[in-house]
Amino acid sequence: MSAIPELTLNDGTTLPAVGFGTYPLRGSAGVEAVVSALEVGYRLIDSAFNYENEGAVGEALRRSGLPRADLRIASKLPGRRQRYQEALNTVEESLWRAGLDYYDLYLIHWPNPKQGLYVEAWRALLEAKSRGWIRSVGVSNFLPEHLDALISETGVAPSVNQIELHPAFPQAEQRAADKARGIVTESWSPLGRGGSLGDPTLLRIAEAHGKSPGQIVLRWQAQLGALPLPKAGSRARQAENLAIFDFALSEAEMAAITALGRPDGRLKGQDPAVYEEF
Ligand SMILES: NC(=O)c1ccc[n+]([C@@H]2O[C@H](COP(=O)([O-])OP(=O)(O)OC[C@H]3O[C@@H](n4cnc5c(N)ncnc54)[C@H](OP(=O)(O)O)[C@@H]3O)[C@@H](O)[C@H]2O)c1
Image (tube, rainbow, N blue to C red):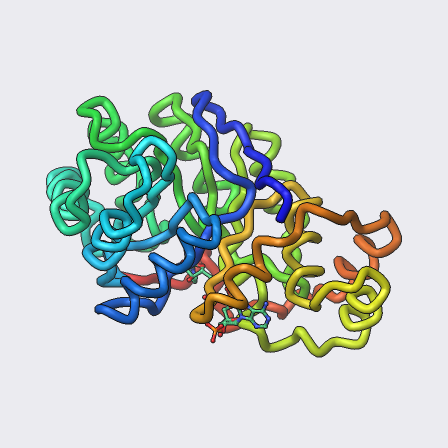
């Protein structure tokens, strides 16, 4: 397997160019899946307070025996904890659950714009960073107007915006908006939860490269400059999803995959302008 390249964030820290998604892994099966992912080579692990698996992730890190400095561990603040003191308490609780001294990355999970508290939550994450609880601060599911509110109110842009991104929903405008603000885009459900990997375009490109459709989709993400977070339960698929740095897609292949996008391509219609998650 080729080495995983690194992306540099706007705060000078780095992330590997692909990470491991952990929803809905939890309990002892979750620990085993994350240990396996670490053994096959993942060094970035994405979790969330709401996934109820920060404890399982922390246990897996300890069992792996890997040096803490080699790992990048991320979690996310739930919508019901966006008030300043609640947010700080939640970051601390996330640390205790995982048995960690710090998170490498902590994100506001959803903006929940009707609630109107995400700037307050952002100030709390900045305070958590200044206390050393978080190395990099970021957001998830933020639209350009939400990013601009954070930047104009606090002067600090997120380092990462984690968004829904897969061939049915390529997010060209949001990716461009993130890039223009110096923000790295991470992709959730990068494989579209596996549902559309039988698409004839993907199968044709996969055959041409001797790769699987999943690998083609993840390589497309990497070449777009996005950082995919595929989840896979089995060790074989975990390894398959990392082996995407030993080939390249042509411009025509990239365009053919992007052309699979549809305006209504979201998996569950979760539009951050209106959708709320607590
Ligand atoms: N920020 C947010 O709001 C948000 C929302 C959703 C997800 N996320 C994050 O993003 C991560 C990934 O998203 P996701 O789990 O929804 O979807 P995903 O990674 O796109 O797809 C996971 C599904 O695809 C299957 N799969 C994995 N590798 C495959 C391959 N090479 N070929 C065929 N199928 C494959 C998996 O099956 P097996 O497991 O059975 O192998 C699983 O059913 C989550 O785990 C979570 O960390 C964040």
